Each structure stands twice: as C-alpha cells, then as structure tokens.
Length: 124
Image (cartoon, rainbow, N blue to C red; front, side, top):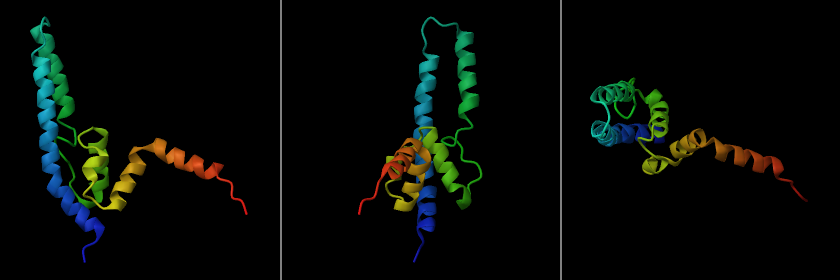
C-alpha cells in the first residue's frame, strides 16, 4: 500500500509542469500589457520588462529548483504565495497535506482556532 506522502509526491510531480505552464502563460499576458503601454517612452517599457523578467524567472511557478520529496511542502508553499496555485488546486492531494498547507498559509485561521480554544470554558 502506498503512503500518502508517496502518492502526494507522485501527484505533485505530475501537476507541477501544468501549473508552471499556466503561470508562464499568465506572466506572458502581463508582459504583453507592459509592452503595449501607450504614450510611455520605449526605453522605460524596455527596462520595466527587463526588471520583471529578472524577478519572475526565479519564481517556483517558472522553475522549481531542488526537486526533492523533502522539499515538496516548501515548493507548494512557494507556489501558493506566488499565486501560481490556490488551495483549491490541492483538492486531489491527501487531506493531511491540504490541512498542513492551509495551516501554514492562513495564519489568521490558525489564530482564530487558538483563540477559540482559549475562550472555551468547560462546564460540568
């Protein structure tokens, strides 16, 4: 029987290329918007695009460095923070993985749960 970690790792490797293609498609559209700015100096447009390309080429949604099973959670967190994926994109993954990432990505929910626990008064 396969463990959730193994299933999640295989699913991650399967889904990552599609997520990256979607990310680069979104970025390409943003670059086209930069290039099509009316009334702006061409050199300003060039340097704005150059700056964006330098920043974006290091996104996990563009290139995932250090692809190891032990880095899967870190890579998923990066993808979530970069808005390459959403928590809904993880619906095929194990409930454990989804819960861990939800806990890490949404600290406001973590605080609410903690506060609810502190305010809870047990009665006999």
